[in-house]
Length: 410
Image 1 (cartoon, helix red, strand yellow):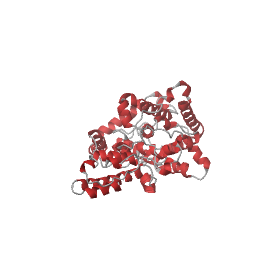
Image 2 (cartoon, rainbow, N blue to C red; image 1 turned 90 degrees about the horizontal axis):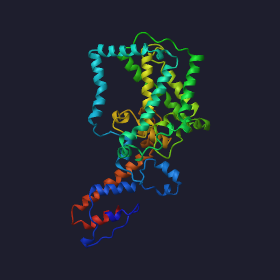
Image 3 (cartoon, rainbow, N blue to C red; image 1 turned 90 degrees about the vertical axis):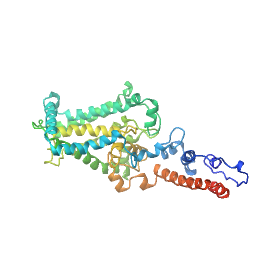
Image 4 (cartoon, helix red, strand yellow; image 1 turned 30 degrees about the vertical axis):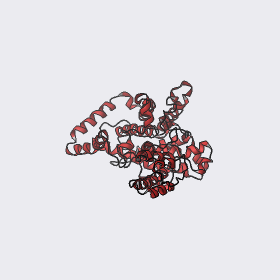
């Protein structure tokens, strides 16, 4: 069957009575590998497109235009696969902590109280911009960590962990002195806007004396992340789907990089209005708690919220697919970096920041729209099944005519 896969076009194999002239049988792995290469070849309609357009249609090709098995699995990491020991421990940590707290809440409540006491007694925590400064610090730490991750992983593992199988593109671009605007503009506009908010719209109240219980702290933290993702979803959707061109232009700068896999710096690269809308949603969400009136969410929960959402946003823009990332730990409901990477290359899919349920429900997925890797997966599976049927015919050497016809069909 090797003769039947000459580039992207099948070559007809004529029946022969001479067994020595018959194509040499290959293993299933070799056949599947050849199919994977052919499936990734551009269609006739794509081959006439400009290079940049073709790259947009196939943003996850490796450098040699081969769709590897790992590329196919990125969008559904761990779905149907076994979790490694670390992932199983991480997944079990939440339920075990909840059971432990129900049985005996005092140790965790005491730890939460001690943490809040340390924060409350720290002078800078009483500054009006402290919560905004924690969020800014979170962005800096997470972006710096993901930018430097390739230095710890090494070239080979870095390439294996990146969606495009290449080394990161200018990971320290933001650290070059002449590029100071890449971090100063978002930082200055964010802190300046929060300062105006506290000066003229909402005076920051003093810190509460009492600490939250561990249960209240945890529920407020998780509820805040869920609510932020829910509230920003329609805004993000409108930025892509609105018929008003200016609305799409507001968000367009955030999608400026489409020729290569994302770097975490892109988390904070957006227009002022785009960032303003995100901050407004976050401020509103930070005022809501399931346990009290508007504005009663505890400061400790808000601080943890800022650190968690900045991490999740930085991870989503990192361009990495690693075992400890959110989409690998909880693939049932977190989309993470694979979905957001694909969203940046194709604005028709995946508008949720963290979760999956709204995109799945409204059909904002590759599977629902029949685009991207989902179409390639279908082609791969169909050709693999066809190959299996051909290989079954090879098992009986007397079925030479059947084999030749099957190879001719492939």
